[in-house]
Amino acid sequence: MSVKEYAFKYWISAKPPTLSAYYTRKMSVKNTTLFTVTGGLTNKPITFLVETIKPLGEEAVVVLETLEGEYETREEFEDALDYTVKGWEKGYANKDEMKKWKLIYLKIPGAHKLVHVLNEVLEASEEV
Figure 1 (cartoon, rainbow, N blue to C red):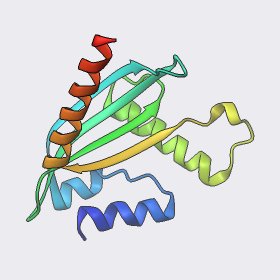
Figure 2 (figure 1 turned 90 degrees about the vertical axis):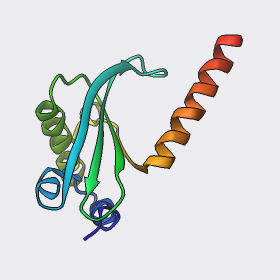
Figure 3 (figure 1 turned 30 degrees about the vertical axis):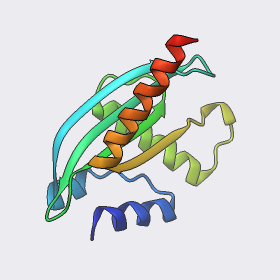
């Protein structure tokens, strides 16, 4: 199963794409970075998990995952993500417990384009 098929399977089923088991069997993680920023609209912390993975026999992929909240380790991040997605499946009684989560897979050329566009936007915002 390719990365795209794996991601699509979990996107369709709305289950967390915790790729760690898949990583160990089918791909290697080349780089992992975890950092937290303040959301521009909510002023709440948002943590990014950014990884470069290399599926066997395929091109490297940059994975961007975000989750509301502040997490210091990958394990904390994945635990909170599991809790969030399982909560969606069960239906939260309290909407305040719901966290926003995003997942983006980019091939290396797409990641370079994203960096280029972000740099252009940052330069333009400094000129204003």
